[in-house]
Amino acid sequence: MYSLSALLLLAGCNNVDQPAPLCSDSLGCIHIKSGDPLRLGVIQALNGETAPLGEAQVRGLTLALDSRNGKLLGHPVELQIEDTGCTAEGGANAALKIIANPLIPAIFGTTCSASAATASKAMSAAGLVMISGNNSAPFLTSMAGRPAPDWQPGYFRTAPNEENAGRAAAIYAYTRLGLRIAATINDNDIYTIGLTNGFKKAFETLGGKVILYTSVNKGETDMLPVLTAVIHSKAQLLFFPLFQPEGNHLLLQARKLPELVDTVLISGGALIDETFLNNVGNAALSMYFVGPKKTTGEEVDHITELYAEEYNEPPTVSYFLSAYDAASLLFYALEQSAVTDKKGTLHIGRQALRDTLYSIKSFKGITGELTCNRFGDCVKPHFNVLRLDEPTQGIKGLERNVFFTYPVNK
Image (cartoon, rainbow, N blue to C red; front, side, top):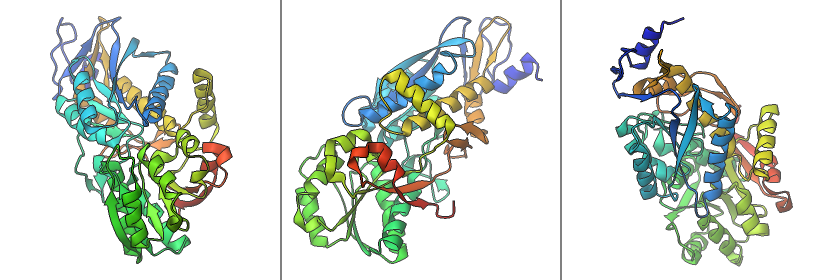
């Protein structure tokens, strides 16, 4: 057992009995008086077509907080919630609003990877930590074992790095479907670019050819020009890991073109969503999706039941589970790194909080064991290729209909 003074030193704070404790943490300390709330920032996409994803993140966080009766370290928890709008600018603005409060040690978010790229840069410079249960773009953490372009110290996530999601789709298309010519469409978002890049590299390494590599703009509704390009390319496969509503528009318009009736369509995890399936109906029949392998088990069933009871509806996406795990990791790190002195004041060393998260090994989460590496990835990436054969069964039917799992040997 450590003495209180030793624990304060580990947390970067000392001189317990002083009214304004000195702090030796390299990033500074937060001091919360007895009875005052512990404040956390939450930045998610809460409006527009991606709102169901952001809502699921907030609900996963709330369920994890409820499991602690709404308190951490004896303090009630207050959430400052900001909307990113699923844009880079929105991510930066939301992060700056959180950072303006010097008593907030951490941010829970974001929903979209584009928002995370700007938000994490501001967060890191301010000395906070940020953890997401939804971001999965390779650009945010690591690529090929090296720091990715948008990696920032203090950023963590429990959604899998989708560096290999595009690879999974490519391997399935080439080895199982026997396809050799493909087209890809992204929306210039770092998430969708990461997936199409991964697909192109893997498909061409296997011997295939990506004959068309193009993009659409966010907010675009007329997909005929890009679909015409796909037709002219004579691609056997179209890989389009888009978000809503662009993914909806592209699918619905593609189904109206007889030249694409035999073209295999594969999208990404952003469209593994009940609202997408409801919006496009039978147009999604026989469409493939590549997304994180879904966790099953008693704990998952229990949390899913709690979700349905709390919100009077079943979850529309499974990412609320990784949100629950992200919140649990953050809460655990706060509990391990913070120290309460004799007067009841809570001291949180900012670098100590980061160090604790980086040091987490084999944490038992709902989605499996979590171990955070030096880039902030805390979950092992496993991906399933799914096909929608029974639209009336919704998201549950889709997630059960697994055609391929990557890595193959797992």
